Image (cartoon, rainbow, N blue to C red; front, side, top):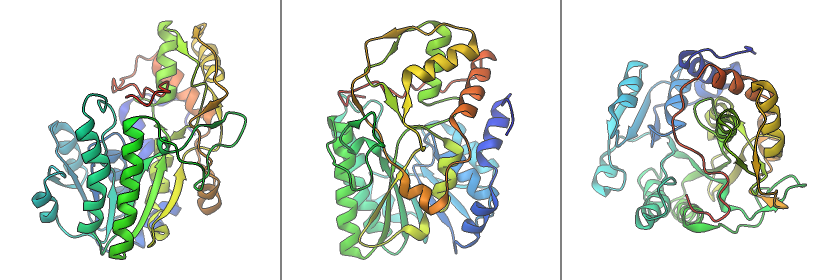
Length: 337
């Protein structure tokens, strides 16, 4: 792998270059692939990966309140549709597709906007399954639905205890339940992918820690352990998920293979950046962690290792690379985002 990623163009290229396995999986898809919520953090690179892997047709749907992602997607060959998915008539008028990624959700700003949070995260998933009842649907949910697990363990497996903290996490579990019910009643093939914090150089937990190390801002240690997966690897897994769709719905965790210490990540980034990290508080004995053993048994381990992510991130910070300016708020143990 490259020692550095020197520009956003190189970053996007790294995350959207398909492997032979991804190309084979996409070649097996007959008909268009529809991405609902394409303008979020993962949607644009997932859409570009599908295009580069040879998808017959890629359609991206979003409100597109910012026109820049729409222009970019159209430039790379994605057909775009502006749509408020909460508008039932507009949802019904969207084109049919045999393969659907449901990426839309509402997290940041959820506190104080609880009604919108529940509408997007709980009410909408069932409506999407009803609308696309004949399709295979990969629904990207959240690892926040799980109870905290011991930091010394592997994290929660797919059958682990569910104890969502806060209204965002609760609404996500509600969405899973409503979508699963709709899939069972409609006979729809559905896979629920519980994602734990994908990371890239402009966004993610490693990004947040790196910039705090660089600026000398104290790093809160209470949520002292995390999982991380490189966004390009997460998208690569998503492209291969459609054969796992079934009715009743199936569930798979989507994250990296390691339980990572926030303190250790900061110390290594400090070494790479020649900065001494500052810390606040102490590690709790448990954290929000996922065990992705099923994922790796199906598809193998992710290509991008933690050390590589740290080296890329440190160089990015050193070069004053662009940030999306959207902190993950991974430190929150209250469930408020």
